[in-house]
Length: 575
Image (cartoon, rainbow, N blue to C red; front, side):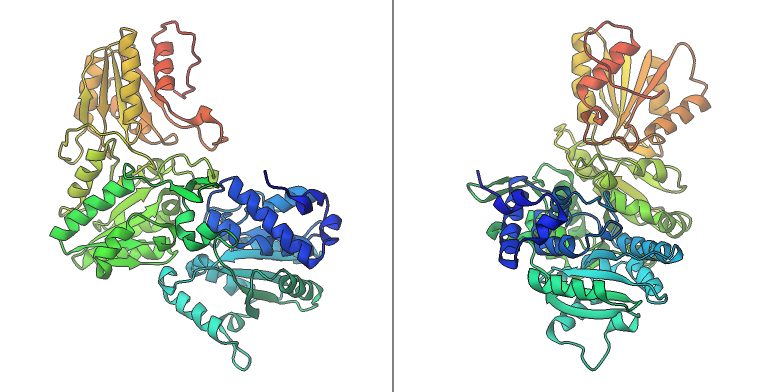
């Protein structure tokens, strides 16, 4: 077990400030050991800002000072020090959306000045986030008001190609020359620009921070720092992008085990997309700066670089761009996370759905993500289900991923969504072609019908085995489509069973809402038929496994509904 003598000494800001610069550098090494040992998510990003975190705590430590972090991927070392010094974190839950931190900083500055108070406001923004429109919206506002604040740009991408747009080239220019006689972009926007400086030089950072803190200028400052992802840990430095997705790190062997495996949906989706792209030159991919996150869809870029479009961290721009491509005869696939789509619902509705542009959306991470409630992807079925003229489908097996990609590659007349979870290992060994609005009966029974949507199909199949062992004959049906829902299949299930239970890894308003609508429209809701939805409780503590759907919880719920005695606790559900 390693020792942390300097970290152990810290119990307040005063004790942190008693450390000399060489001791602060040793403290940085100790913090890095902790981050590696705890197998932190986004390891490369966390290791790259250790010195910055120390300097921020060292200088901006007054009770009302606000230190805000973009997204939170980089915040691990700062949180370690905050807990040791006893400072109240002004931003305990960082936003999961890039560039929001700049808007929050402007909000704090306006609030502070209206109340005629005096304290410092610091925001740390990642280089990738600077390509977002909201970042420039916030800087446009900040530069127009006489409000003192500090924006720190953490520039840690070595390759220009990973920036996703012209902004990367601009930062590269800033690396090579200092603007002594001519203003740079940030100065033109009203900021006092400083940099670029070495983000791993604690002494230099502390000096700059003190100068800004003591400055009487009522103006926004912009500090451009250059850092190294994975700093201080050779495996992470060698492949910082790969270490973003670490699930496990073996300290003894210096070996990473990545989250992505060949059995997860992006692999099958990308493989299938490549197969159809070989046959159809009109297929293009629109991505959102995923090159920095080891996206499996980069395999598409390697094979078809001229048909891979990186739109930067600009979701709204990506969707409107894809809609225009669709009008020109292309078949665009927009690749983005579930929580990234929900911030641009307007473009999805007005640009794609209302105007019937056949844009294909592949939505990844549509599931619970335990490391971040703000990255949770279990709302998309709810808000997308309310949009007219949109086809929604979600695979329950590996075979369905391939079939849905092939289906989407046809000449569609409306936009469609393929909803993927993080993990999908189920293989049915039977590939059934996908037809619009048709579900799939996987297993026949006559007492209970389980209607699955998406990655919970395997849970339903395992739950049916437990029910069969109790003598409960169970049908398992895969909805495949949420819109249009297979109404004929649902009516047949209603006529042939005593109980229908819908199961989805989504919040209320998804599959359950659509099933209730169909049952009501056909007059099937009666004492002869029970219906019970199982879905996720909205925004509870996601680290508590009571909010996870498992075969056992499905099984226990059904036993409770059928009034069959069982010692196990039942899975909560809302009727």
